[in-house]
Length: 166
Image 1: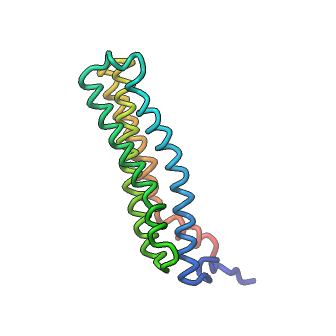
Image 2: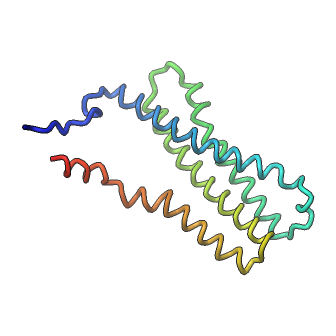
Image 3: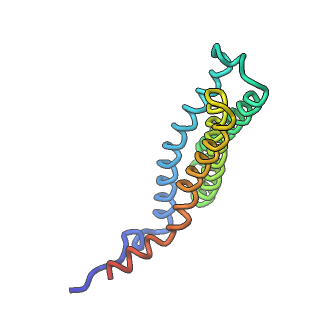
């Protein structure tokens, strides 16, 4: 008995593929948007906390890096919505998907910078720079492993699945 290894994606039209790609991107952006907005909100309130005046110049600089990169991440992750509004009903979904992909990637980059900077800020404030530096490096490497290393190393997973099915 022959096994049909044709994927449902092979039967979709080009328009259906772009619509699916856009829907997939929106789902990803919803997850990222929630995380970056929570981080950004936290960072916006930090200077108004009672302990912030005791922060060192290094901690204040680190805070600015974390805050600005969170703002950039927020702007980039939300920007596909504005782009969609501008292109609504113009039949330019491929352009929108390509733009949204670039903005999502850039937004994740700035989110990484903001998360790592926030870890550096908090660990330096709570512990000491001798602990803050290695903990921040470990955190940054962990994010890079999960967000870049593993996805790049496993881009061919779909090919492996097809090989097992045949």
